[in-house]
Length: 175
Figure 1: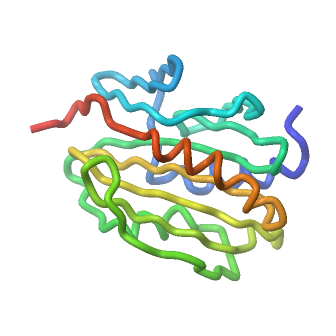
Figure 2: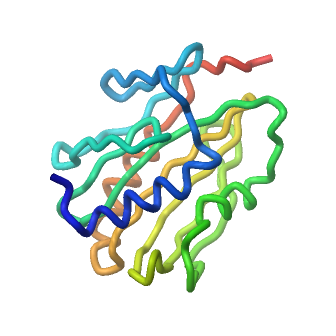
């Protein structure tokens, strides 16, 4: 059973999945995700992270040491040309009293990505979030970590390693 604290995190993923619906047919083998002709890989996953199934997300884990949740997801649609800051804001729908700690555009898998760290509330419960959103070859990828503020800093190094290992392998929409 997922601890009660993490249920709030699962609500975050359900709310945020609007731009990141991968649909069915997603397979995960080791650190590589396949969905049809699309393939991408992510960095190391600590053995303490417990896999959880979250509707409309490719892969997610619960981290018991931080009561946090890590997720990675994608959606592909050549016609979607939404700016990165707007995609990030979409992931934050449902969060109130937002305080942006960091917001930057960084190089990521040979493209630009929007990287944000935000303190906010979800249904009145304080949460800290770190999000990366990237567009590449007609697809949007988002990676996120959300945890209670008092445990957030402790979970960031493992999430950082997970993110640093991200790379696209094959896109179904490459020109």
